[in-house]
Length: 131
Image (cartoon, rainbow, N blue to C red; front, top):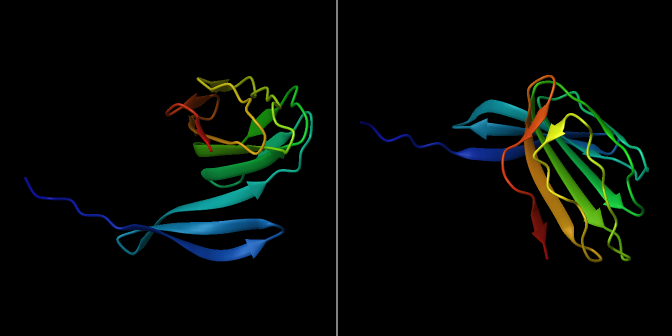
């Protein structure tokens, strides 16, 4: 068997309305395009993405009591940052399966990645928090 070597590198391709679009290159060839979508806080946010690799960020300044997801088939990453008060909670969209509980101390960051199949989002691993 041979060895497979791949170089995956992000390259910024532009900014649009507060969103950053990145190409992820696989051995110099565009493999995946992602869009970082900063979502303003809302008690019932709608996560709307147009790329098959959507990244959503939000600072939790209150509790999210409901949310919804509308993205194409592909990967979805959520990143939530607790404000300086902390202990804010987040209710995941009904179509999200295997999501970790979002609640932490002040300024903690929570990230989790999912695969969306067109109907449901499935956790690809546990949520990660830091610091």
